[in-house]
Image: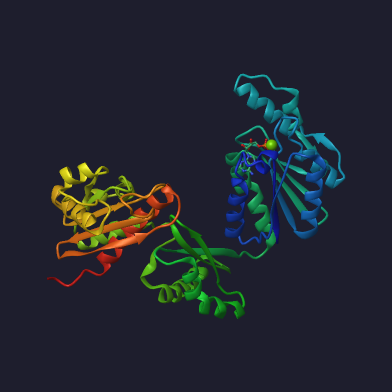
Length: 417
Ligand code: AMP
Ligand code: MG
């Protein structure tokens, strides 16, 4: 079975509401093993909704429409579906009774517009509403089907989970699932990841029913490599994905910092806990963002001593003991790391200083960030980063880079002095 999603609402076209319903439905359809090759948005216009429904029914076995079931004049999905079905709209007494009850429970009077929500095309079945006032619809059209769901996301999700997805799965026959696993990467450019993965992607292309690999890049969160495949059960898929994950890791090495929901800060926390060392930070350009991410990890108190946010040159000197001279420099970053280690009484000290822009500082170009790291074994040379983007992107990328440096250093402790 192949389904399309049609999101109805002029606000979606104008960008006033982000179409999260289609994203959620796309994910759920994939998990249920239902193919979804197209998602379309259309405004609150009768003729265009009718045309979009007809076009979708030509291509797909099922169409999930969301939005336009409300009580206002621009909620016209019901009428459009009735036209496509060639069926009149008649009031459904059970639905009408339920809407009446809901208004009575809330001590409000029902308007004529709400009565419109009880109209159902002849031949269709209403999906009872549990949360809102709008019922959904299951509308057979020949051997195909249109499902109509309310626009408000919590109502849409409840009704889709309860009635629509089970109905689609029943139509699809023998169960199959699409299962994905995401490997998260930092420190490699997207083009480099693509290059490294290319032999694997090419090898998979010929193979029937195999894994597909997709790349998704973000300047602040790194690159996600998504492995997905269709299988009879999640456990069968899991075995195949285990093998594929190993193959991808062999190509990308230690730049893989996590899988699925695993975060960079989680990886750093786990590494610190494993070696039993504590961390003290001195943050300038990141203004506490490194600490904030680490604090989001449950149990961080076991390995995070704290962070000194030292933004002005004076604060760096007086609190952290950074010597006179430029404060965006390798030696300042190192002095900050030493200062943090001392002031916070930590085993490892990290200092980060840089220029987030928009203007350059002390003649140092925007995006230049220095990171110093001092461990019980001693200090490694400061690392210089050249980051791209606006102020916020540079600060976020600096945060990720600092955490990644720490992660890699913890994986490879240097030989003692
Ligand atoms: P409607 O059923 O068209 O009256 O939609 C009611 C409300 O649900 C809208 O005002 C939006 O806030 C929300 N909504 C409608 N469609 C979507 C969508 N595709 N994604 C997220 N929210 C939506
Ligand atoms: Mg609407």
